[in-house]
Length: 228
Ligand code: ADP
Ligand code: ADP
Image: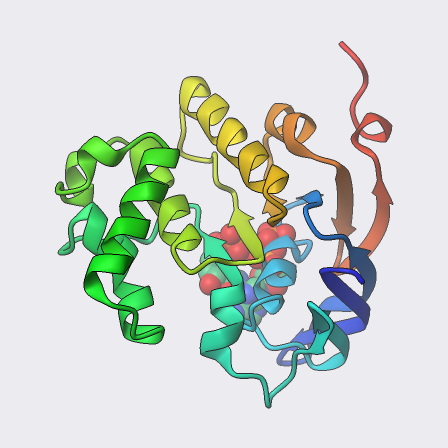
């Protein structure tokens, strides 16, 4: 059974067709990179997967369950986590509090258990020493790792990345690639929008190419990138 199964999914902004009958199956643990010109619908596409942007027609299934207006958003967004380009950390909370807020509010998880788990994920992404600091004291790469740890704290099946490397230097990009690989090895499905060809080539099992709201091709990465 596919982790994500999509049939003829469309989305309008007003009368502008932003997604035009997208169909695709994505396997559990697959690493998907979404490429395409600016404005082609990449961001909209990944946002439909956790219903930040609801689709208007077609069928979206996650882990075998149909996602529609009756779907519980809290549960869905726990299963389908998102890491944003600008990290979207809460500036008035410490790194650790950023990670434990959602599990405590949404899952009503206990403080000690949640903190222990958060520390485990912060260690996994290599920033446990920063746990008591505020986001502003961290570099961009460190903040991006906090954002990933925060997503992991909800134990997601899928993590969506929207331009995760846009603000990062090459060294930090390498770290993020390593982290994404580890997540995929653990069976987490990765769907990543990026403009960075090098990054795309390193992480992609499969590349989706979008143009004007259509998914025009899906292929293994060697079809898109010439070998060095
Ligand atoms: P990409 O991520 O490929 O740059 P987007 O998904 O952000 O593309 O946008 C696709 C198209 O939809 C663009 O033309 C954009 O201007 C438009 N769009 C995106 N979000 C909205 C919105 N909230 N309201 C109206 N139009 C939008
Ligand atoms: P991205 O390409 O990463 O989506 P954008 O700068 O295109 O970034 O969009 C940033 C935000 O503005 C998004 O929340 C998007 O939904 C919204 N947006 C984009 N285009 C439009 C538009 N034409 N009308 C209204 N909102 C838009």
